[in-house]
Amino acid sequence: MALIVQKYGGTSVGTPERIKAVAERVARWRDQGHQLVIVVSAMSGETNRLIGLAQAITSDPDPRELDQMVCTGEQVTIALLAMALMARGIPARSYTGAQVAIRTDRSYTKARIESIDDAAIRADLAEGRVVVVAGFQGIDVDGNTTTLGRGGSDTTGVALAAALHADECQIYTDVDGVYTTDPRVVPQARRLNRITFEEMLEMASLGSKVLQIRSVEFAGKYNVPLRVLSSFQDGGEGTLISVDAEDAMEQPIISGIAFNRDEAKLTVRGVPDIPGVAYRILGPVGAANVEVDMIVQNVSADNTTDFTFTVHRNEYRKALAILEQVCNEVGAREVSSDDKIAKVSLVGVGMRSHAGVASKMFETLARENINIQMISTSEIKISVVVQEKYMELAVRALHTAFGLDAPAE
Ligand code: ADP
Ligand code: ASP
Ligand code: MG
Image: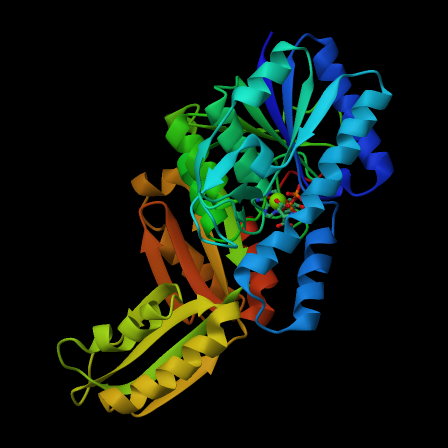
């Protein structure tokens, strides 16, 4: 007998029929003698609908009230799934994040889980019940509802698996595993049997939304065996996210390609090249809680330099307003900006031991006539910023050039 935490995403619980199908899948695992804790997301589209309602009231909703409202999506699905299980004769009980209790810090809309009280869950499991828990939500020390950021039900699943020392955390979604890149953009993408935590962490942080980045961090930290599977198909083994590469010798140079259209680029031109100027530009941006991603400073000419960085597209206007002010203060010439950019990244632990990955990447993009605007590298990834309209072309060309395409059938 194993203790298994299963998480079902929005599309997997998108209709009453899908919820019944989840109940059937849970029943099959239970029939094999396993104990089950099920985490569910809101029905597909529901979280966006709720956020849209808030936005129809005000363009800047209060974060506490936003969380108070947006957590209701998951509350509906937990009860529906518990009903579906009971209708099949399976004892089940649903809990909201607050009822469990999943304690978080106070950061509304992007709270971090601090602790989980597993007593009620353990008692239910001991009584033979299936426990259904709302994803994406928690409660802070003052009893306020918090949410964990978009895609946060993955993190609820992994955190529960860690707290309960579960044998496995299974993330059921609308694809049958982690692919070399998003299969909706590159139909030739290949499913990976395994991927290391390190690589999955890079893929998630560089834009692959199949797993929320914090769920991968949690799984790595607490050594939770994590598997991504399809809720629409039966029998597949999915993708196991594991600590070590199965066989380092066989490790491909590139494991996957991630991309992200959610960024915008800001440049300050003609900045006096004196000590402290980077701080004077980025200090106010950081103080306004705007996260900065890539940063490039040019070699100076005539004692002035250009300074470019990227931010999340949602925070582009805010960052631009700050920069326009800073531009005057530091005596720079002008600010320019572009929110039609995308970041494309190659990820692979095999890159460490291979030179020439960057040049092959640049050669491939040059052949497609795609201009590279910014470059950033680490040991296991290379990212470039390109014009958004070339993003899909760039991903497809690189996927082929690095030998990732699935063999033709
Ligand atoms: P859920 O609602 O189940 O949480 P998500 O939409 O959050 O599902 O995540 C699944 C989606 O992630 C897939 O439909 C796919 O389009 C996308 N995706 C992006 N990158 C990848 C990748 N490398 N492998 C698999 N899916 C990916
Ligand atoms: N329902 C939330 C969202 O859409 C959480 C999740 O699905 O993981 O972001
Ligand atoms: Mg998701």
